[in-house]
Image 1 (spheres, rainbow, N blue to C red):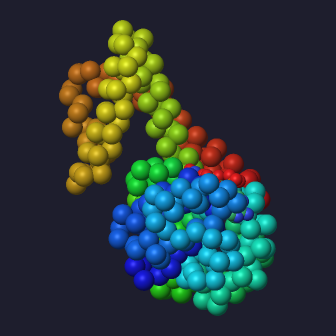
Image 2 (image 1 turned 60 degrees about the vertical axis):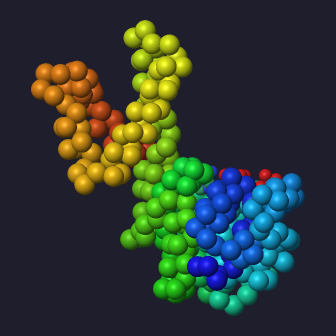
Image 3 (image 1 turned 45 degrees about the horizontal axis):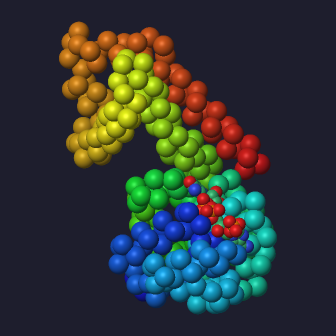
Length: 268
Ligand SMILES: NC(=O)c1ccc[n+]([C@@H]2O[C@H](COP(=O)([O-])OP(=O)(O)OC[C@H]3O[C@@H](n4cnc5c(N)ncnc54)[C@H](OP(=O)(O)O)[C@@H]3O)[C@@H](O)[C@H]2O)c1
């Protein structure tokens, strides 16, 4: 990856975190370029990260990979501007939510190598989770490159079918919001039990962080970790019985199904 030239079209939140992640992984700043309609973002990136910036034509002319990090609603227009600028063998990576490969192929040409990804916002702190799917024009070397780029901001996994992007959107794409909701609810419940709001907030966030780190570093699954903190007839058991009696697992399943259904509708 260190010798590949990567250009970002759109230099907003996601592009910023990917660029910083790539630099942290040792990609030379001279091999990264970006363009954006908002030139203040480019000046900031150039000053803080030392990457190259320029017009879409300038950055596309020398890129092995073009990472499209614009909002879904402008993707069609961006692709149509990009199409005559594409060099043979350039890989396109799209992180836009809800834009199917068939639309990208319509806009860019049906021989173009394209990888579609669904990252999530923890990419901003290099703890993202990304699902990837490549079209048939993508070579094994291009797939490996796409995986390495997305892995600069967390973990990335290949999907068995493009349709699985909807399930990934429901699980990890929207997932951070589910944990934020649980954190909000725990914080409010802590305050209702008499704790100061700042204390309830600090304890909630640290507990979420600690539980996630424990789950990530442990050689057993979350089910066993849960059992290990649940003493018979203890406080945790009292709380968990309440969750289970109100069909907590069923609720989570129904919530993810609703998100998946909405993802399919939006892509249509
Ligand atoms: N943020 C997330 O959590 C997340 C998660 C998964 C996937 N995604 C996907 O990632 C993509 C980027 O999201 P983001 O949050 O990084 O958006 P963002 O911060 O709005 O960044 C997009 C950037 O592209 C610029 N832009 C618009 N039109 C352009 C053009 N024609 N040429 C070059 N640049 C152009 C925008 O400028 P203006 O602001 O001036 O329009 C903006 O600076 C989206 O498609 C989104 O679906 C985001």
